[in-house]
Image 1 (tube, rainbow, N blue to C red):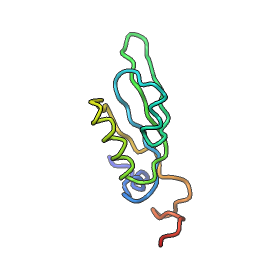
Image 2 (image 1 turned 90 degrees about the horizontal axis):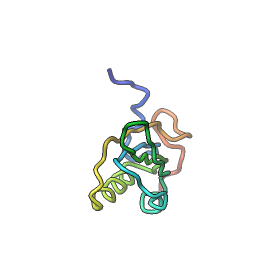
Image 3 (image 1 turned 45 degrees about the vertical axis):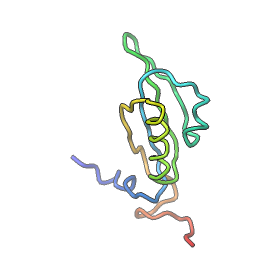
Length: 99
């Protein structure tokens, strides 16, 4: 079932918080190449480690840029999630001024 509260994440020109999971361990220094996303290595007992990238991106073009960086380096992606629309949005619209 689709959760209507997450629909704000699907606005292409709005900021949102994303979580991307990739296999293996990535050095936190990668953050600079990935739009400043936080790089966290997660390990569970008897399972291979994976890396979680999370953070606020200004729009879906920035998300595509992060995914392109991973693709260019042959890093497979397990999952991409929109965690929440950025704060300061009402009714799917940003509070920032448009020119």
